[in-house]
Length: 112
Image (cartoon, rainbow, N blue to C red; front, side, top):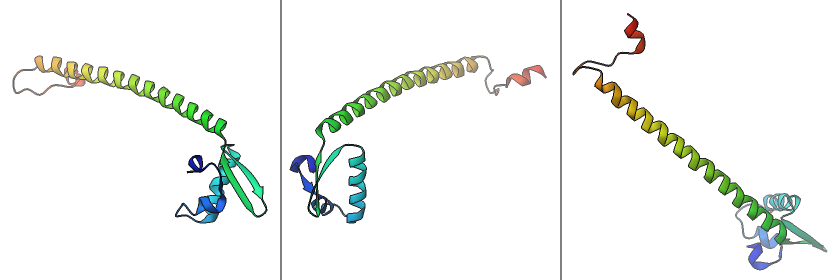
């Protein structure tokens, strides 16, 4: 919204949201502290505009974060698939050692 309009007063921004003007003001304060917006004071009005450099930096950071997590989740997927195939293979091996109708014995049963 702010990117499309260039500059907006705090009142114009708050009119676009179903929350109180005070809540919008708090959000704008956080954006200002994060250096994502600039504010210009004209008499009683505060006029906000985006800080394009900070927005670009945020966009690059989120892209890197998304790629890092995608790699990590892909690696986790490989590990889980290997574990699943190993478990399925072990289950298949155990089935060959028991006679028909017998239940598999736990390791501690073998010592009795």
